[in-house]
Image (cartoon, rainbow, N blue to C red; front, side, top):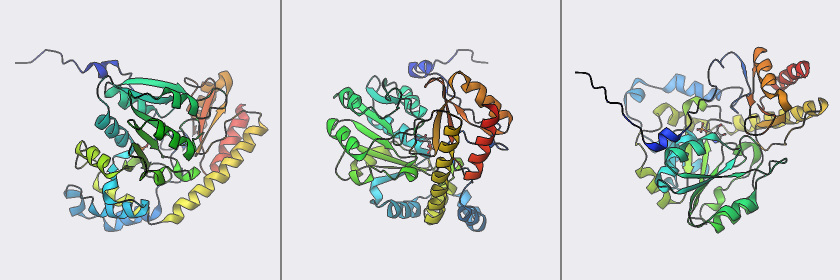
Length: 353
Ligand SMILES: Cc1ncc(COP(=O)(O)O)c(C=O)c1O
């Protein structure tokens, strides 16, 4: 007999707006829309997987011992001060589900990475938002310090921030950590390699600090879904309790281990992007297009009321960028790839402008 009763999801789920980033039909295009590495995964990772991945590797549930050893050595922390995550997204999810109960307050900034709000809402948290400074889109440190209260259970900070490209310095992060000793403070360092500012050295001093890193951006492995969450050992033990023992697949864990062995791949890519970013600034200035100087591999520029039109026209020419005008009036975000890719982007933009 068929059962016709409709199931009702939790209220928190009913209250969430569906989130569908435009991930379709991107393969053959110049992808300057998701802040990925635009030259692809490191060749030595691909080579390693092709040569050494065995049938046994795929038939077994993943074991992380070797990956944890190699990554803790690479990042300079103890084995119990990090956990491997299924991308930063799992790190955000774990942090919120470990430390935030239903109806408790989570502080996020606006505009910022969409998944902070997504997982905070999923947890049934009360989300409070503070705006990046109008015009400059600088980090609103005074407002955050004022906004933190003993009721704030978590604060999520992307440093540098997506999509503004602006950042907060270490002294600012310390002020936040000191103001909010009972708040879990996440510093999401997805774009760390492009700016070189990291809160990792603060971990030993602040028991309320969490730092996340990812293999999705500079390392060119977004499809692998692999990242790391760092904090003091007691926090990581709590987080691991709520984590699936197999959340990172074995190939991703293997790829991450191999990826950190080749520092040159990362250094060369970062240098290429930083050089291309200068080219992009010059190109935008030539066209009199206002933009925000960025500490990451993407730049927000001002297209006025033509933001959507420009995005669509570039797509027709095979170049993908992200419209952000729904959150910062008139803004479009372009990922910085190689110099050649940025030249191609500027050439097409010039024709449309
Ligand atoms: C600030 C920030 N954090 C994390 C991510 C995603 O990271 P992951 O692929 O590791 O889940 C992004 C991706 O756009 C991002 O902008």
